[in-house]
Amino acid sequence: MKPSSQQDGFVILSAMTRKIHYFNPGHETAILLGTENYTPPANVQRMTKELAFLPAWYANPEDYVLIDEINSLHFLSLQPEVFHPFATPVIPKEINKFISSSEKTEAAPWGLSPHSIQLFEKLKKKFALNIAVPSWKEEYKRLAGRQTAAECLEMLRNLLPGISIPSTPAFCTQIDEIKKHLTLHHAPFILKTPYSSSGRGLHWINRPELTDKDKAWINGAFNKQRTISIEYGLDKVQDFAMEFYSDGKGTVEYKGLSVFNTEEKGSYSGNILQNQEDMRALLCRYSDKDKFQQIQNAVCLALQKIYGNIYTGYLGVDMLVYKEKNGSYSIHPCIEINMRYTMGMVAIRLFEKYIDFKKKGDFCITYNHQIGEAYENHHFMEKAYPLKLENGKITEGYLSLCPVTKETRYRAYILMT
Image 1 (cartoon, rainbow, N blue to C red):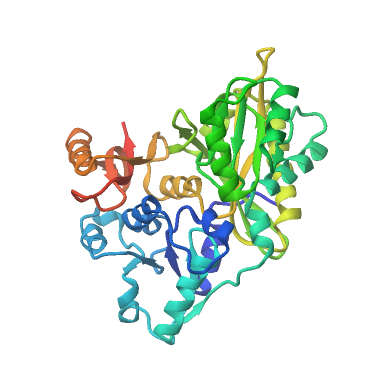
Image 2 (image 1 turned 180 degrees about the vertical axis):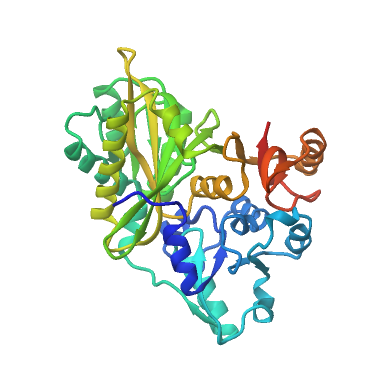
């Protein structure tokens, strides 16, 4: 449970064997369906394809990254020399050109699901590769859902008796249960589907009665996931997360803080790039330093009890600084648990590897509806914010983290201004 440098678990693992990284966002839906032959929605397929190179920025140089097309190879050659070497981009159908059958490698999907595991199993079989592929455990489905985050919140209530903690979400399986909850409690409310992340699968209700729009969302959510959680909508001041790593042998280690931003409806938009000390100081403006450390220790202990002996991999716990009705500030210590690599961990790795320690900026994920709009924005930002480096670290400017073409809609980039 001791704090560690962000790279400890990662470096030790990759010293033993090279990892094959695979970016598979939205894997929670694949977990819900539980099928190896899952076909992601079109927008998720697009995001997977267009941001496939993202793991190269957090992977170790000796690792591999699965990409969808040759664009990433050209994109790699355009990066500043000081950032090299990168992990090797590999197209799945040509993987045997880069990895021999005798080389020991380890599957490293963004998120574990029957679908992502099957993808690696197919590569392993087709090309006779020596890939260590994790097994899917039935417990993972329970651990990846919001019910487990609620269980963790209850555990934290017992571990932190002197700290104000919001009420635990209620889980409903019928619309009448939701209606009853609305009459017994004060608005606003947030409805959430159990298997969703990054601010997706949320619906706000600001009155005690359901509108036709509310009912349509609820019925759609019940049809897809059968259960909906409902909780009080807090007066948000700042989103943030604590990042952890579980070794699967009973130990969970703290990896760092992640301060992030969301759109009006709650969907993730990006992370602040800043050193850990300054981010902690920012959050401790709203909380006593000792209390903040107590929360960190308690969350680490709760994760250790729930995940420590079952799951190997990263865990991101989304939290919230919010304003109480009396004007004071409190911390919600466990809004959701992301059982996967997270954008927060990407931000931590980006900062420590590429950003000047004294500087502050943003790591952003954006989406443009119109074809060609992302391409235009990319070229505008390249000219408006030229990249500047000092001693091999970024001090100012714009850097795209993935290839951008005229067809691109999703972008991942750094902006230091």
